[in-house]
Image (cartoon, rainbow, N blue to C red):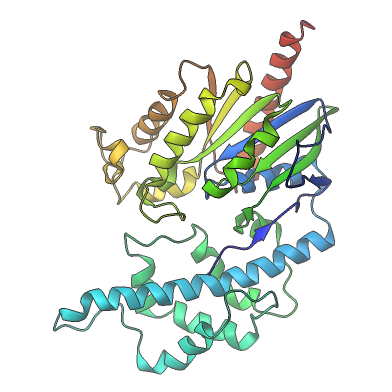
Length: 357
């Protein structure tokens, strides 16, 4: 099931067209970059909630529909993966731990019968009950815990509350909106005010197919905010399901730092999804990623492992000065504290660059 693509969702935002440059809408422009799944759009949502006036009723309704659709997609993905793992176990004489029992076949078939490309809301209370029963199934849980599963970080968050989401009266909460996955397509401009200064956040799609549009956001930008998901060291990118996400992020960051159009611009990096990383590093070593195989410190040390990833990115900066922070994009207090420090720095650098201070 494909992740829904939303364009121009942020409050007080204007959507750029497919051609031409992004409109000149504010003196201070922050270009938000990062590969797909880095948490870039979550940062954008946090800024909308904190400084941009929040979401309108129509925007909440859109997020609600996306979350309900995604929840079905998560279970469909788990069912598909369980069947693949069953095939791998097929030659064994022992029953596969990934086999969904016969008494859940009807539930499974109803969930799988839902079209992946339907625009209508398909999460009925019956389907929500089917998903709840399947989510409680040991075979589905074993599939979810499989080390090679490539699935959204917040899958369990939404499946744990599928009966709430499946209720007809459900409206997405603030936390639900922050955790929901929406793929950015095109260029989305979010206007907000910080310390009585008008600013614009320019969010562009992170998938490979979207990057040709990045040049439209670069013109006139004051600084770059690059998001890297440190928890993704054991995951593959959606585009080819082969390339490690950290490997992709490192190459992308290096390319961004080399862009002549960004010379002299402030470069900030958020090493994101720290909360997920802290849980993952307890059982999965950094060395599963080819680019991190040279790590020789304690395998589950929460500080040294993060420092190693940070050093890998900063080594690709080509000598550029980089401001970096470790973040958890779904933690509003964490984002606010770090973002305000970053904004103060951006304003100071811009004023210095203009000879005003």
